[in-house]
Amino acid sequence: MPKSRPVRHVRRQERRLPLNPPVRAWALAEWSLLPLRIFLGATFLFAGLQKLSNPNFFNANSPNSIHAQLVGAARVSPIHALLGHMVGLATPIGIAIAAGEIAIGLGALLGLRTRIAAVGGMVLSFSLFLAVSFHSSPYYTGADIVFFFAWMPLIVAGSASRFSVDAWIANFAASQGGVPTAELVAIPFSKVQTVCGHYAKGKCTARAGLACDAAVCPFLLGDHPVSVTPVAIQAVHRRSVVLGGIAAATTAAGAALLGSAVAVGGRLIGGATAPNASTRQLSPSGTTTTTLGSPSSAPTTPPAKYSGTVLGAASQVPVGTPATFTIPSSGDPGIVIQEKAGEFVGYDTVCPHMGCTVGYAASANLLVCPCHGSQFLVSTGAVISGPAPHGLTKLDVVAEPDGSIYLK
Ligand code: FES
Image 1: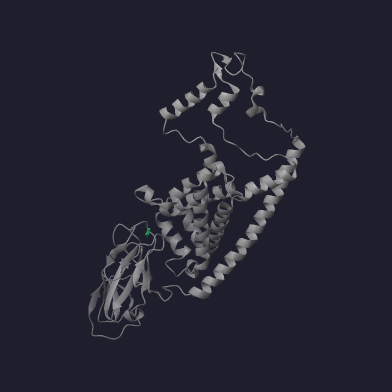
Image 2 (image 1 turned 135 degrees about the horizontal axis):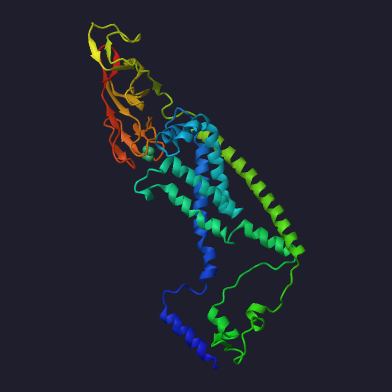
C-alpha cells in the first residue's frame, strides 16, 4: 500500500468533519476540569470562612444567623419536620456546615482526596437545595441545584491529574516503588492505523494481507515493556495511602488554624454585636378589644376603647429599635418599627421568596432576608432587591393615645 494514501484519507476525514474534537481532546480534558475545580474549591472555602468570621451567623437574635435560617427553612422546606428538630442545634450545625465547606473547598483546590471532597460537596449542596432553595422558581435560579450537578464531573474524574496533590502522591509513590507512572500520550487513531495497519476485508493492510496482530504494533508493544509484580503494586498502593493520610491530616490541621484565626479576626474586626441585637420581643395580649390602661406600662389616659390586639407599650419600641412579636391570627413572626417619632409600621416578616424570617438591619435601615439577601423598605415593605417577587405583607399597626401599640 502506498504510504501517502492513508494520510490523504485522514485529511479528507478532517475536511469532512470540521467540528470534530481536536486530536488531543482526550488529553485536554484533564485541563478542562481545572477551572471548575478552582471555582468550586474557592467558593466553598470562602463560604466556610465567611460563616466562621461572621459573629452574627451564630447569634440566634440576628436575622443572618443559622438559627434564623433554620427557622425559616422549617416553615417551607419539604424536609420541614426534620429541620424543625434541628433548630435547637443551630450552632453546632452551623459549625459543622462551615467546617465541611472548608474541608470540601480545600480538597477541591488542592486536588487532595478530590473524589471524597466532591461527594461531600454534592451531599451538602443537595441538603441546602432541600432546606433552602427547593421552591426557587424557575428552578435554575436556585444556586444549590447547580452546585449539586457541578460536583459530578469531579466525582467521575477526580482531580484529573493537573495541579493535584493526589496525582503528585501517586507519581511519587510509583517512582519510589520502581513502577512506571501511567503518563498517557494521545496519538491519533489514524496514525496508529497507518503504522500498525487496520482491517480491510478481514486482513491487515500493514501486514501484506496477513491476520492482524497487536503484538507487532510498536504503539501497543512499547520499546521497553516493563513487568510489574503484584507485590510492587501493593507496596505503591500502601505508600500512596500513607502519604495521602499525612497530606490530609496536615491540611486539616492547617484548616483548623486558619478557621480559628478567621473566627477570632472576624470578632475583633466586626464586633460580636448583631445588627438587630437590640430588637425587643413583644407579647401580644391576645385580646381583641382592650380598655385603656390595660398594659401595666401604659400611661393613664381618659377612658375609651380601642379595637385590636395590644402588642405592648409604645415606649418599648423607640425610634430605630424594632420589636418582634408573633401574629396571633397566623402564628407568623411580625415586626414593629417606629421609623419617625410617633410613626409605627409593622410587617409579617415571612419572606415572600422562600419563607425565611426577615430581620431589621440598622446600619442600612432596611429589612433584610438572611437566606438570599432580599431587601425591603422599612417605610412601605416594598422589595428593592430580589429575589423576593414582591414586598412584605404590611400589618395595620397603630399607636393609640393610651400609650399602647395595637395590631388591628
Ligand atoms: S427566602 Fe430567599 S430572599 Fe428571603
